[in-house]
Image 1 (cartoon, rainbow, N blue to C red):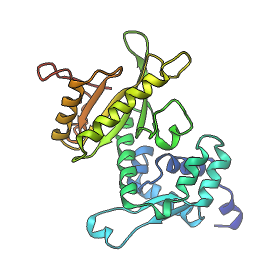
Image 2 (image 1 turned 60 degrees about the vertical axis):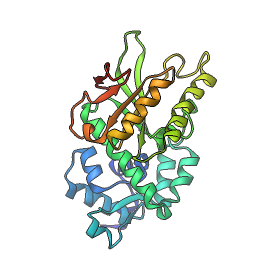
Image 3 (image 1 turned 45 degrees about the vertical axis):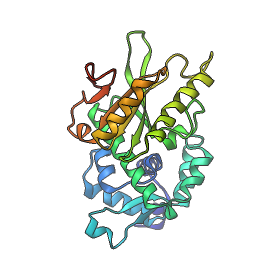
Amino acid sequence: MDVQHRKQLSIGQIKLLGLVAKFRFVTVELISSWRDKSKATIYERLAILEDQGYLQKRYEKSWKLLGRPAVYSLTGKGLRMIRDHKPGYFTDAVIRNQYKNRSASLQLVDHSLDVAKLCVQLFKQYDGNYDIFTKSELDQFEVFLRPLPDLYIRTNHTDDNDQAVHYQLETIEAGTFTWMIKKRINAHQEWFDENNEDGWGFEDNYPHLLLVCDNKSTEKRIHRLTDEVYVDFETWTVTRERLETGDKKVWVRYWDEDDMEYLAL
């Protein structure tokens, strides 16, 4: 490969770097699924960008026994390329955070990959008709609660009041303290109360809150919480197990034990 070619990135390569920036951390399998391309093709494209210094690969010997794949993220050079080609799309704060990719904890890497997999899964499940945004993309919008939700989903349909249907998604790990879950739900309500005025992006149409639970026990705790409080938005739940079935009607809008409704987004 000649030097001139190595310096000139194609539109496709820049888009691939943008996709990595969207998720922050990616694997070959994740990009393969999102792009509907073979793993061999994606591996080659990532390897070229790594060789050119735009991507860095993280892989530890112990990961082989654990079945963990290599993880790719943007280097400083890759981040500068994204900043120059997509000005304003990723905020300075996002760019600064991703400069720390090399030293990121495995906990952060695993959470980012988990959310990325959910994003791909939901995108495929709804045939690519919904726009799904990650934290890296949401940071530019002041309309969202901080800390940001894991994902924002904008659908292509409206409700009975002709309002756009959209969702904010957050993951809840097994063992998360009930008071922490309650605090987060309350934070959404407080954000709505503080900002619900003329001209606000979510005026009278705050996105439903989607909570992805690691297990049924956690989901039941959330149902007990939402049964006790009044909020200006709906809270829907799903377990990982139900979500993995691939069915669309797996989300629960809870009223009480005798009135549980399974819905699709």
